[in-house]
Image (cartoon, rainbow over the protein chains, first blue to last red):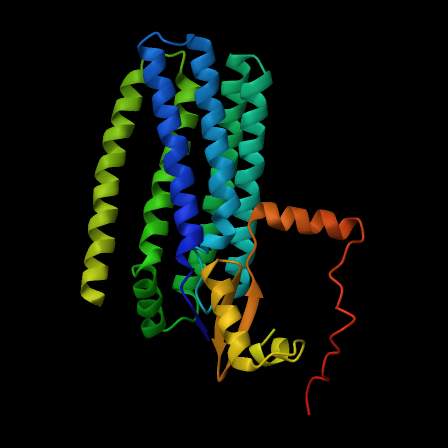
Length: 213
Length: 76
């Protein structure tokens, strides 16, 4: 069975949505630092924007098919749907919380919901990966699958999802420790960690892509 | 459904169907898989589209076959 690569359009929509919401959140943060908008409004708006990001990326996740391979077709479709639904529901909850709940409560509950959704997805994907990599797959099939993941539009999905999950996890951690004095220091370290990991991912995927050529 | 089965539902030639499938696939609405000699097509829905379809089905709205097109029987 040969599954064709996902079309470029859903990937472009997801990337544009993710970057658009990220830029919006950054603009709100900048406006807050410059004192243009009220601080509490800015914090609510950033939480709202990250909720929107969860909905946008979660909605398009089943179309991106990040887990698809010929061997795990049925399992991966179910996993992608579950992950998409988890992110959309978590994002909707974030939006409602930051729109209506008191800010401190909204941050705390949103962080727990976010961590819950990410953990559910991580467990689900790890389970699928375990079956894919340690199942009855032969070495040739495994190499073919890894090769397929590093080619063309699939690389974009890798970059997008890595950045997305990192933003969500950083936001959850920040919301949980926002009152503590180490919050800013942790955020700086997470940003540095993100840059290093992203550079590593970029190097691996681009190296594989260059070797395929 | 395979390309052949789908083509049986419409009064257009198989190459025309194939061109339509290519457009739908490029738009990200369907996904195709090669199974031996035939190609199997499958709907590709986002979470929102999935929710809307479930909502519509919960209220009994179903896709109905056009009265003007009579499907050919499948198989020999």
